[in-house]
Image (tube, rainbow, N blue to C red; front, side, top):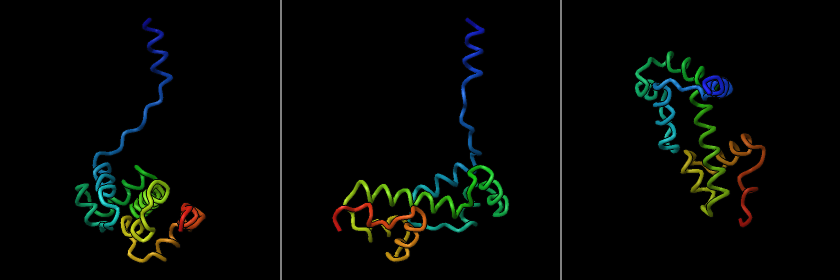
Length: 122
């Protein structure tokens, strides 16, 4: 029985844990996608210098803070477009874009299709 347990444990894949300082930064970014915090603000959340934050964040997530925030924003926008009937302009502002055309360009660049493609009624 013990050998079987050891064999099962050796076959398990465990998710790597994220550095708690970076986890706080990620949580801060996810809290309100309409805000664009500065690197200095994010560094203070993590109790790191800006250069330490940049290096550790990239190591932990594989992305810069800006790339990570963009991914969060675009995924949230896509989910809102698919699952709500909110106007595209409202969705844009909820994910940090005041200019609808800038949002549409960024969305199309990120996903390869414009936001209106996800809407049946426009």
